[in-house]
Image (cartoon, rainbow, N blue to C red):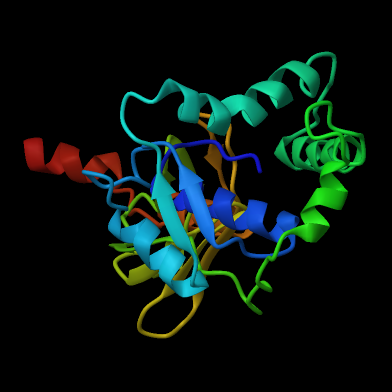
Length: 237
């Protein structure tokens, strides 16, 4: 599954997506010592341990200075980079994922040179536990107060917030598809944007832009008294 950062939330979303595509839960998840997943001394990070606990699966980390194990873990990624990506065009991240999923369906139906069987047939022999009704929530969450300049910074991008809620505290939720925020006191929707993985972009919802424009217009149209010049002449005289 395609992810765009090594933040633990994005990594766990990638793991969840891979398990959904696998169609079941293995007994153990094998990892090299990826930051965010590995804590220290062969122990998982708190977030990864909670993720595995919700799914009731175990974990195992490659030993340090073990290039053979690390190579086995990374071999699939290298194969995808050299056999899937070259010569392809992608409209966006969703198109990339759709093409990648279709490629795996085709590749896993071929006979593996070393195993002498098709991976899809070998998978049928694995004793996978069924997937839960709902995968663990891997979204990022935090609370902010809507600033006077009503925009929310996620990674390097800015997403507009409802200008009418400036000063209110809101709950922000960021997953692999959406950026949303909800007012804590009333539950009002403060924003809903598609998450953008390009860098240094500004996303402004149409309704937010209209409110901002109307607010600026009020200030520009405030009546200001214009005194006759004769009054100033009288003061000088």
